[in-house]
Image (cartoon, rainbow, N blue to C red; front, side):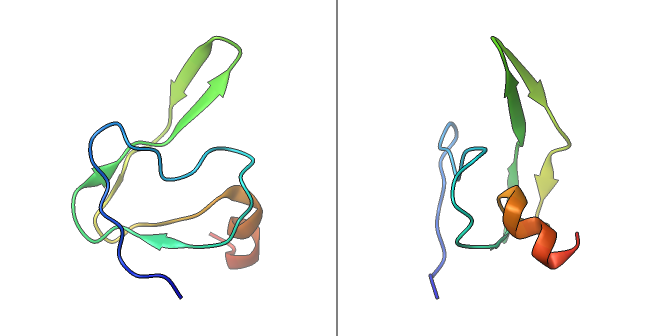
Amino acid sequence: MSGPRKLNKGDVLFREGDTSDAMYVIKSGKIAITKVTGSSEIHLTPHVAGAQLCEMDLAGAFHF
């Protein structure tokens, strides 16, 4: 089990395609989820305190 992680603006928690090895719960603040397609970046719904997130292949195991 891992402990808390503090991210600063611009830090990357994980990238699409990374191996799923953890699930995260946002304790405070917010995090933007983006998807890169070609040379464009699509901003998905931001996640705020209390939200759970993880890389997609792990998400399927939790049935979000």
